[in-house]
Length: 573
Ligand code: DGJ
Image 1 (cartoon, helix red, strand yellow):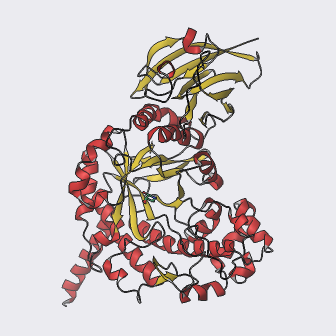
Image 2 (cartoon, rainbow, N blue to C red; image 1 turned 30 degrees about the horizontal axis):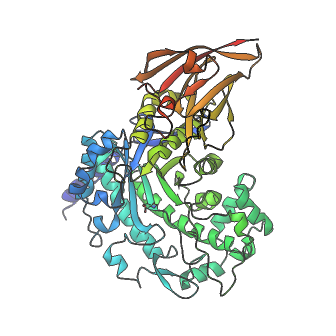
Image 3 (tube, protein in one colour; image 1 turned 90 degrees about the vertical axis):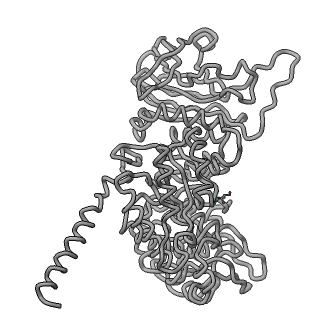
């Protein structure tokens, strides 16, 4: 090629590259996570954002005709963020050839309905198996090997020990993130990415394929040992216990370092899943560094420290507990293996309060990708945001698991939408909290600002000679409280009785000065009724009546559309 032409084309290429680099948005312009005091916030369009979310059923977003009829339901449900699956098999039917036409339609559909998206990368793994890889992966099991159990059974599960599996997934994920950047980095419809879905192995406590056995008999990788030594004093206690029990060795085989137990199998699998997912995340973030998380199936009902006491007994049926999954007590292993992953997120269907506490340890930001909807979800979401500064809460199958609008969850999402400016202002500074109470839970005391609040589950009165109203199973009362000033609170919720006592020097008693019921419109307080008398038990307590349509008699249900109360207190003796 003539030198002059060569020079021109080189210049043109450079310009193109610079152009792409120039068009690459700065990481602070795109949706990202940002520390705020003791917490982390999701920033979208430069502002903190609360994800009031709902997850579509697994394959709803693989057809534009199918998803079209869901957008109005999602909007009606006061959802602002939709968790939608992206199937590897759908976008890369042929190796190296990508088709994003359906995804483009989903992004456009969300945009048209003023909704944000969290995309769920259904690729190598989904619920501990591999149903989403493309056919060219599934069929070529020599090139893309599977995991095996101790009986030699091959599972429909891509082994995390294979570089070929990992690299194929990472290439496709990078293509996806490049496409999202090219089509959405100015609009920010896509705000977060879930990488894989509920990874982990069932049917055995670890992969026993030749690849896996070789790695298991080899040394624990230096990267993991370096991480553990660097973080020795801040490791999750249950995990540290396992390493300590084996003598805090800094090198050796897996069993030498962690002992011979199913805990070591779980740790070994966690490392290999994390390394694999970590590479996929890095490939995706190199294209478009949106916040990325993994979701956890909370199947293992015992801690990793308990697992260390469970020795694998040859011939006994292997335990199945989603080995290697991102359980809270394996957070250190996941962080060491996938340093660019932003969050480990619990699919918290049961023991909600416990898992919120466990997954906010060690500074892990809380995002709940999957939980229950209806009245239970309506109670839980207040707790996740108010008590644990959650970034977001999502009900699984939010608008697809019932044809009737979920009035309970809609009520809570509407409430949280009103309170969003206040919540974002008070996250991470100790001036906000919440309670989640079952009927048998004792009243809970919570310090918020200058007062301690005592919250009790509100039961219907039992009239003489009558039976108490039976409390349906899985009934929860919940409330959120925000200190709007030294003696002022905004409180909201369902089925909670609140009393206040000062926790600062001065007159020991707290009384209700003025109590207004009301709502927020665009962050501005719009007062409704002024409450006293029966509404505050003659000034004795704040009563957050049960949501309309709840299990209680009507007189205990909130009649007013205004679900928030502004309480000002005074001190006396
Ligand atoms: C948890 C998974 O993450 C979801 O994708 C879905 O399979 C639910 N279980 C069950 O519907």
